Length: 363
Ligand code: NAD
Image 1 (cartoon, helix red, strand yellow):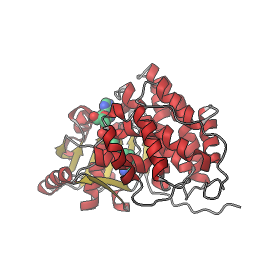
Image 2 (tube, helix red, strand yellow):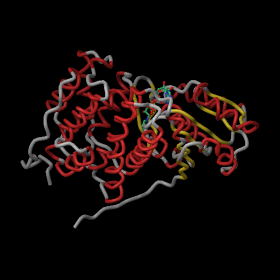
Image 3 (cartoon, protein in one colour):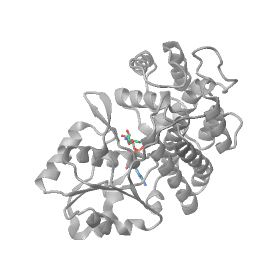
Image 4 (cartoon, helix red, strand yellow):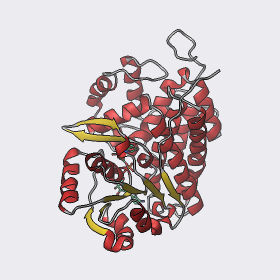
């Protein structure tokens, strides 16, 4: 009989088209009277109008991977204007900055995601400094209120919808073989994979399809909830390492690496792979994800993301430097082969039969 633990993160979620209009009341509900609005002029324009007199200061240029220098600049604005509530509208970069400011000030946050990254429902914050990325987990960074206004995602271009959607898919896939796996996150993960798998082709066919956008955004919320509840393995570790050390684009890196990380782990996580395959309606999970990305026109090689082939040995070194839980034990040779396949954009190996050798991980 399985034993498990499950800890849920508190979150107030508003979901649906037009929910942006409720931003001022949500700010007031948190006691906010002086808001710092984080987000590009394009994404945050309507929010600024709705906030009216509550709007005290704006920060318009959030940066991926939350560099601490940028956080310092925004923190000066918070102090100078006596800000008492943070509002972020945008992708993981805008939300990451709000989380970094909340960590340093204890201020409440209302966030409005416009991508499928999922950061809004995790207590995790990644930050970069001097070319390295570190991650911390603290209840202080978890946004109090998340407003998922589906209409905000309509402008996300098809290509970015695919990469961001696969970023979400990765949270759900790795949740299914996490050490803390439990019936709640399993259900959320399968739902997330099902929704994302069926919505992304419809979004690519018609980015204005509101029903498909709602399906994908709900999938992203559920996938983000998985990311916030259980530990991630090889795939997230690789993306984190490559993103931080080589400044690779976040969602694109997830899109290239996911099928390869899945193929690496597949022999040691056969049950998780069956669940993914079933949710996507394919026979082989890693190949199914690869073929989905190809069909949707997403990136398939690290080369096209700008990683130099000469960086691969360093990437292997970084990815295997500190041990962490993963269904299949990590070997430098195995990770080198994985990264080489991903660099060239080769199709991943088929999942094949479970690895039943000692240390193979198939329990
Ligand atoms: P992003 O926020 O950098 O956005 C990517 C680009 O898309 C930007 O140019 C942005 O302006 C644009 N964009 C966003 N929404 C749009 C919309 N609706 N219409 C048109 N353009 C839009 O990218 P991201 O992938 O959402 O987030 C990546 C960042 O989030 C990374 O720093 C990553 O580390 C972090 N992240 C953190 C967590 C966590 O739990 N801590 C989880 C996922 C991602």
